[in-house]
Image (cartoon, rainbow, N blue to C red):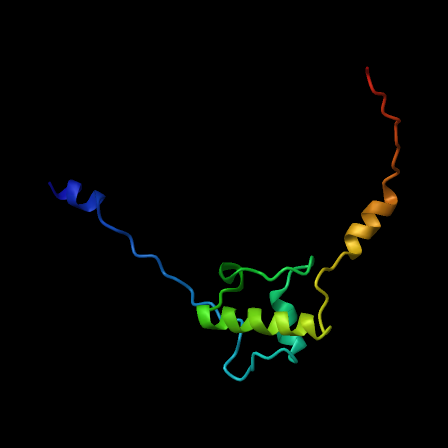
Length: 101
C-alpha cells in the first residue's frame, strides 16, 4: 500500500522567475521607439502577449502605442525588405496559355 501512495505523488518543480520585459520605470508611449521595437517582429507584426510575456493591460498599451507610431509614420506598417530581395533573385518565366475550343 505504501508504494501505491507514493507513485501518485505530485512532484514539485522549481520555477525560475523570469524578468518582466517592461521595467517599472519604462513608460509605454508611441515616442519610446526603443521599447516599442522590442515587441515587433522582423516582418513588422505585433508579437502576441504569450511571446512578449506581458500582462493584458501592458499588451493593450503596447498595441495602441505601436498603432499610433505607425499612423504618425514613426514605424512602417510593413517591413518588406526581405520580400523584395527574394523577389529579385527568383527569375520568373511566363508561358502562354492556350484555350481549347
